[in-house]
Amino acid sequence: MDRRLLPAIVLLGVALAAPFIVYPVFLMKVLCFALFACAFNLLIGYVGLVSFGHAAFFGGAAYITAYSVKVWGWPTEAGLLAGIAVAALLGLAFGAIAIRRQGIYFAMITLALSQMVFFFCLQAKFTGGEDGIQSIPRRPLFGVIDLKNELTLYYVVLAIVLSAFWLIYRTVHSPFGQVLKSIRENEPRAVSLGYRAEHYKLLAFVLSAALSGLAGSLKSVVFQLASLTDVQWQMSGEVILMTLVGGLGTIFGPVVGAVVVITMQNYLAPLGEWVLVIQGVIFVVVVLAFRRGIVGEISAWLSRLRA
Amino acid sequence: MAGAVEFILETQGLTKEFAGFVAVRGVNLQVRAGTIHAMIGPNGAGKTTVFNLLTKFLIPTAGRIHYQGREITKARPADVARLGLVRSFQISAVFPHLTVLENVRIALQRRLGNSFHFWRSEAVLDGLNERAHALLADVGIGDFWALRAADLPYGRKRALEIATTLALEPEVLLLDEPMAGLGHEDIGRISALIRRVAKGRTVLMVEHNMSVVAELSDTITVLQRGEILAEGPYGEVSRDARVIEAYVGTGHG
Image (cartoon, rainbow over all chains, first blue to last red; front, side):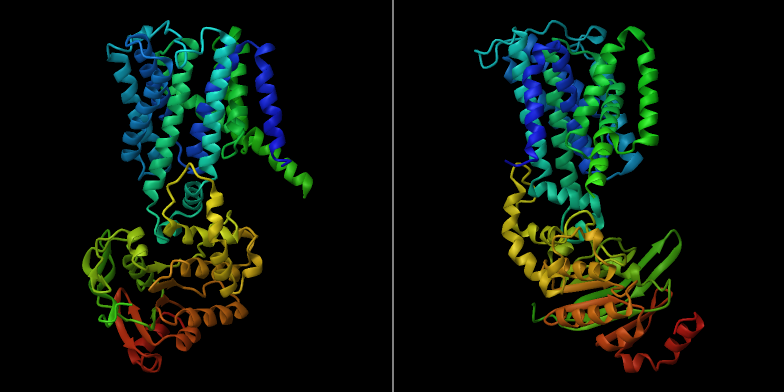
């Protein structure tokens, strides 16, 4: 057997057994944010673009899924697809405007655009304003799988998130992924070989937005709630934090980052606002001392041991 | 090759201004098909700017560029590469964290038309390996295929860059200071390589190393302060009083 598969198999075993030990809703929250962070990482880690507007895709999709399932009575799978589609379209619009810019300018444009989405959600009638869209029904998946059972829902969410992970892995290791890497490494050279760099970056941006949308849509199904928190700029900041803590540009890093950040938020919740201070301190420590993030540092340490 | 066109690459009144500073002024350059053409001149003469204009990395302020008889003044850089006008860079341009083989495959991959396929395995690119190995062997780095490009010695990176460029089967090669930073031994090897790959192609290069220029080029264009000072074969240009003055005046040999 391929030894590289071993950690993946161990993790799969842990994921299958986890709901018998840990509260399933908490696990599902971790899964949604792990997917969000991995989708974000596709852009920052493999294209080298820092978006500060990913909350728009996450929250926008959450609202669309919530509304179509609750108000229009769509089945859950249709609601999820609608969320992904809207996130992808938003991504196309954001990307078309921002993709020619780099570094801080790219971050600022995506932030500005996502703030526009936020204010739209704040003002628009269908989002329910400060209340958000609450008690979204968990309609059976494909008309047969009962999502009201929390354990069933967990395995459905797990299956969807794992498929999305696989798609991200496939994208990174595809002919498209090869071109993306070459653009990240040396954009003028890739252009001089005949690749129109913006088109590749735009597709990566749309993929990242669509997968972030899937994460947001799943979150609204799990919590039966879509609210302004999901589209707020803090959400964009949180996903950056998760990715950096875990290790950007690594496949598992963002997952680890999401586990760490969500666990902290959950178990330190009694401390109230202090959670933000602790998060801030961790962020500073990571940026100053562990640039590669948890997974990045561990794999660098392992390869030093082997050498 | 388009046989009817005598000059494969031609500029008329090519001019580039940067915020009031004129880097290139009214350059009429004619590159004959199938020759090696060198551009020389003291630092700041505008050689690299001309290069960037020809490959569309810069937009000219005025003037026109024709390639194989068609106007490319407004084309995008990726598009001129697709037409067969491919450049190298002054600082060796490889993809450092990809392997040597992958570097060449990136160039070969475009013609497969699967470069947007994010749902397919990169194993579909293995079909290019044979051609990639052949290109690497051709420039003398066949044994290094599994190394990361960053781990190659500098001279070998140059060879890799040339192999990658050749993978596109270009009509015209634009080499920006191919000998920059190379040791004596590498210079001999790379200049022999350039002579060999120039067969059946056109090469336009910017180069400071005069013995290389003398040995390789059919035609030399001397630039000074953004304008053409002299043009012709090496023997003629090197005796030109204005050229000697320009070089002595700025301390170049």
